[in-house]
Amino acid sequence: NYAICMAAEAGHIDIVKLLLENDLVDPSDDGNDAIRSAYHQGHYEICYLLFKRKEVRNKKIFHLSKEELKDLIYQIKKYEIEDKIKDF
Image (tube, rainbow, N blue to C red; front, side, top):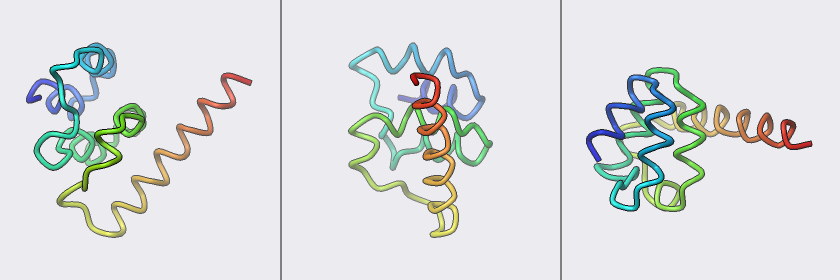
């Protein structure tokens, strides 16, 4: 789980995708540290990938203010819309 946190924080999207394929990796570990770290570094596409995972959505994201949480959701929604446009 440390690896996905570090990859998310550093913006290594291909590594994050690879790690998400492994059932032993829990992207929601340590209070959703991976998505929080990616958000703080501005890696919003990684935030979107992580948020698509049920275990991330169902667990509280610690250490984000209300404003940061609103912005995180806004950024995730932007990528969700872009993803749907690509499929159109």
